[in-house]
Length: 123
Image 1: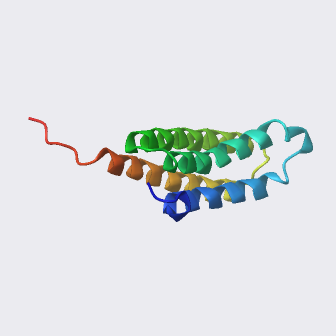
Image 2 (image 1 turned 30 degrees about the vertical axis):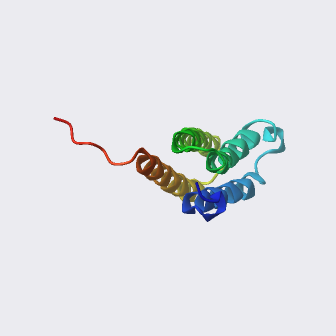
């Protein structure tokens, strides 16, 4: 596999993580070990799992780490919903972040599909 920093999906995931860190700076201080930490950890986990997968020796291992990254993206999606519903995140910030998550999720799904190779026709 190539250097993870060359993958468009990693770049998008990294940008998403940076935005999550920026937006959570204004969260209540009593959430630093709660929701703020969970949001940051799940966001960072997406890019970290892409990077780890690239460091593995096989497409099967890469695919496994991409699927873990997809799980982290879903976790982030939930935590953002919770932050919005608790009033920690405005609607416009939520919508922008949600769009970024959906884009990363689609890119991860596409990359997993490419690693699986062509689908054989079933009879």
